[in-house]
Length: 125
Image (cartoon, rainbow, N blue to C red):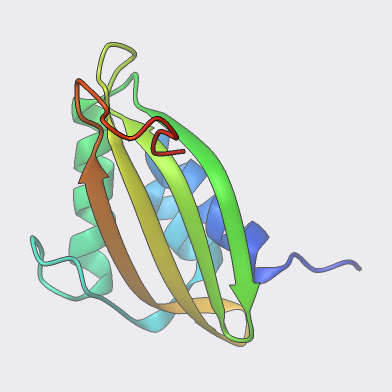
């Protein structure tokens, strides 16, 4: 059996959460002692899972476009463009995952809104 890389697991986790399948994503890929560092929610597994589920319900046309994935030892990172709907400029997001035994045990996320008028000619992606 060919196992998935950590960066593939991280990307699949985010994809499932974006389409409203956070329970499945957490059941498949997240360890029991999971913690996260999103400053808007308590740092436990259940709170983040429910918040991701609620966001997907509020934004049924959410678009997650993964731009880059990286893996280094027990860490994986995903750089993506997240839009709540097709008309939203969105946010550039980086998620950093820490793994133990191929389960996500820790998560950090950072976002930067896409501005209406980009000054940098190279863009955000």
